[in-house]
Image (cartoon, rainbow, N blue to C red; front, top):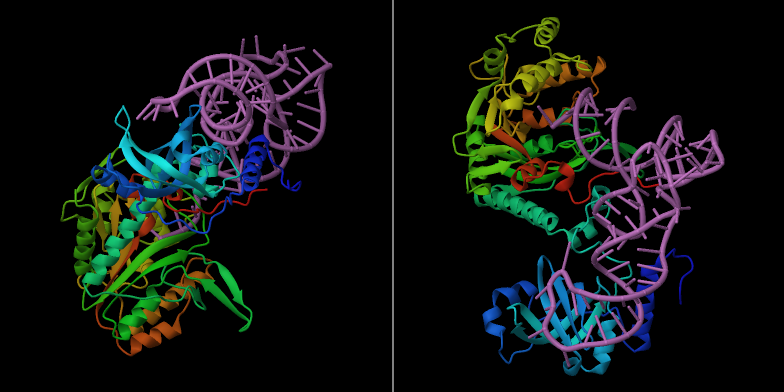
Length: 487
RNA sequence: GCGUCACUAGCUCAACUGGUAGAGCAAUUGACUCUUAAUCAAUAGGUUCGGGGUUCGAGUCCCCGGUGACGCACCA
């Protein structure tokens, strides 16, 4: 019976023996189904209907603790985050069932039938008239009191984290609620949810290095998308005037507290709108997501009250530093950065230097939700030129707690301008910028058929979930974050 | 990629300047028919992340490697 290939510790051997003993008693420890009359949550919510009534109900869940008292035992059964105590009395369940129940281990999934009562101390308890094992556990759970703290194990074995740490389960419930709220918000406003390719022959829509893969039959190189922007805009050309997609995007870059190589964005595009309309829409979304208006994120108090601050990219730099960086050459920017004590190590291009000055001097301090607006043309190849101001585009980035949570523009719909912007990117690439865009003739062709004026937004779901669940690492809001292989 | 720190029983953690690896929970056996971090008694459980070195002696010191956390860099 024992499998010598398995390297079992003492506890695992004992659990394996309990499994064998149950089978010897004629009990199959892996049942096919169980029809519970109520979830534990329902039992708790409707307890007045059951307590001391002559009603038998049944529940199922994981046995997470036990207290044995000779001919009586108490176990705690948990389903989701709710748990209920079960009272198993030899006189009630009978000799056989009682002996079987003694062979159950913490971690086993059980089904219980019985009547509900309150103990002397007032605890809601199900007195078992029948109890069955539904699934046998063969490894011990982490300890009930301290839970599972080891971060590496929580990420690698997320199922254990979810079994043992309710806080973790609550974060992922909240994540689902947030996504649902945004989906509902957009759907109610006639946005159509679509799916666009993850495998793309040409990648685009963001500055990033892609993951590369290969399709055998067509013998073609493919990229995992870094964004879905260019596909959604093709749909705007096609007359889907309001469109959105929750998209897993993939960027082949470093990992840190706010970056996972695969992450989720929702992008939405609205024909006949501009970036001002989209700012309103973003504010409205957060009105739904944060009805309480104020949240605490770490040490920060964040107030979502509308309207959010508008922070002009160039003007805010000038206000903070006294330097007008508009229209400056790359060399002049380097000079200014030096005077401001900004470390430019690794940053060479015009756009990156500008961005670094902005991040260091302005963005860091934007705690309350703010829209950074009117970015330099050079770092925004898909955004329309500003209708009044030379050298900048109609673009905004929502910043909350110093963190970028999105990106948006009045979308560039002039195909000739778009081609020129791509050409500039191709030049940058030739000069060694590995994140520069690829030329996408097919996309330009779509614009040549005419795209209505359009506003578009991308929101980083993971970061929004971090903010709203007070988590400080993206790994704590992604169920299975990328880790190195264990060796 | 670089730097700092961490890794000890199934889990959570101890172990002083190098000197017999320990506790709580979980587990096993026994007692106990309203306990609830049950209690009481006894028992068992270890490749101290892996490899090498120094030493009479290494969880502890040194070197190489692994994984993770944090910071920096890269990056939205």
